[in-house]
Image (cartoon, rainbow, N blue to C red):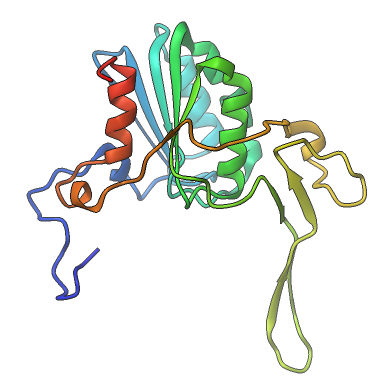
Length: 224
């Protein structure tokens, strides 16, 4: 990002926050607080140069040596992808957090589609452990997706269309319009409004700080 004068907003000396690292792959993760906590950023719900996303996530859980006191799953800036690649992980993750622990899910207005589905799963399967932190998600919980595109014969314009309806608030069981995979994967989560509403302040961004992540870490560490 540059300012109106074409100068970089972030100085070269600024250390990027965890949430802006490794954007060239779809998964970035690191342990925190000497292994008591864990941070995971999913940039997209797709395989990448490191292989199968589902396989990478399964390996992370298999390698875990003890229950985490807290985990942070960052779904910001995630436009979606194939939600079947992450469903198993989202369902199993809460069991890898201590009974008294917390699962913080970071969301913003660029959390869309399969990332929205992931947030719904984490809230549903995580129950009382799950705390949503950030801004309202990028879409309603009821939306049309899937589909494809076609080219109009005279104008040549390319038209995108959607054929699969999603309802993550109530679940979707209408055989005439619901995306068929939702019969196996959707959950009636009710609401995905952030429990802790907070946005990323630009002043913090310029200093290499992540307002939202810092708020979640403060809660996880009992500092607030």
